[in-house]
Length: 413
Ligand SMILES: [Zn+2]
Image (cartoon, rainbow, N blue to C red; front, side, top):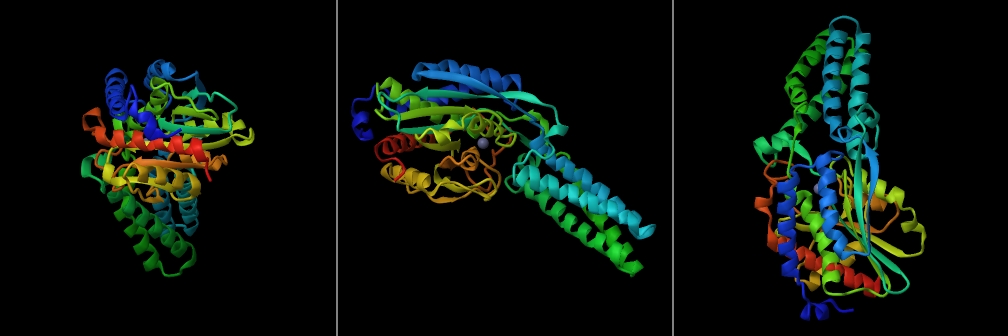
């Protein structure tokens, strides 16, 4: 089936879908506001979107999963606390008994484990220390008329992030003003521990130990890195992705299009800002996507706003997880047909839900349209429906529809 042909007599066209998306996002923001993973607002927003989405699909369900929402960004506070303890231990070691510096070694170890485990590798290292909640994933399926040979999943996430204090207060680089001195302090602390434990030079040991104090304001600042009392609206990050995904099903449904052999699924994931926990639960609950012989791909659509910064992520989860080159090409070629030459690259920091698919062995890629600086609105109260870019949403819906039609025709090869 040719996408351009279907556009000619479309009852609902791409422009209409972008209007539908903008209105939908405004409604969700007004009715439910910020949506922390596992909170009632996230659930209510999912149910609201589900009520609408069920008109465009054959089956729809909300699958729940458990998570510890505060754990993911909680690592920042663990790092701050551990660094205070490490600093104090080194000072004690330098001035009294050098064995006290072993406490600093433990503090540094905890900091590295929290940073690496929770943030870089998205492991649930400290999750059990935090309160457990329930979130959900909404899964809407539009079936094929005949035998299902292909399956394409387009996804956005419904939850929103806690505000990043320093990005809001100081702009794009705000968070780095805190992170860089904290990392410098960490390195100095490691050096100081080594000196306190191994060196005989008392003056050096004491000097190094005291110089660590210069970095304590950075550790203190880590405690306010995110504001768990103020979650953001997340109109762009990522209700835009949710509505782009829903629009794909709406286009097919409103225009009576059904593929013979391709199943199209829209997933509205929960818990992405809590460490991609929703998409992880989704793939855990659906091992059949890997084993049932249906060629399956996943596309994560996250933050659709800044058209000049459209990008396809081939490397995800802090660059550690590799997404599928063929899915990237599928998206790239579909975008070219829409007049957009979109770079294929690596996520600067963090992760998208596509990483969960890749980790589960499902060919995946993510599509993002956000200034990677990061954008001024990224994870701040500025991410409201007032700053939506309808044109970018419209272009992205067109690209996603082309991607779906191309995949139906040719699969991945
Ligand atoms: Zn996001």
